[in-house]
Image (cartoon, rainbow, N blue to C red; front, top):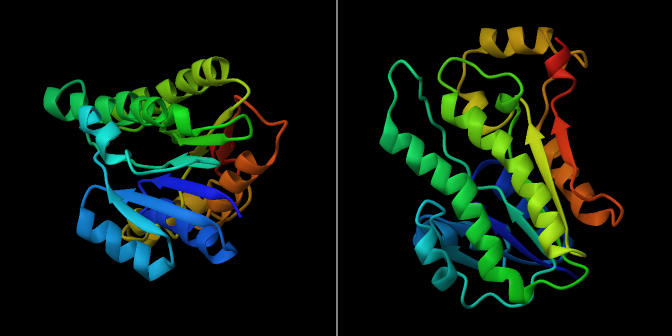
Length: 230
């Protein structure tokens, strides 16, 4: 049995990963911005505990994680959707997302460093907007590219703890993409070489691989069905 902490585990792929590991019998702690929701989701999926933690408030992270013990596997999946353009630049929104994804992610690792051990592994969430930006992805593309640099420096600083990143493309059955019109998903599917969109189960499996394989380190793994080639 492994001790697993999923930061951003109350919805979407983070929740699916937490659920899969709880069903396996691991001791799972998950976090979300809202304490009540974190507790509710933890109870629903059989996780050991839910905690309130806001990645956009990095000075509060250490206190939020004070009760967490030894961590074998750490997954930081917390994300925020942001529509920001250079032509209509929202500085407050940009600062919030940069803080959440880069400063917040780093502070989680900093706060937990004494509870990691030589066999621990970390997976950070990025996204393929870093490779194929769209109008409105000014900040999203930037921070997801920054995750790659963060992975590299953490892998060096924390060695022999392994640190990797997963970069999902369009995840067709995620709540965000399910809300899109069917013709949008059909068009994306048609431009994907596998003729199917990635699923949450695909991403969960990729995260599990990155955590499990002891020779995979400082890797950025795309899970997109070859979408960038389309």
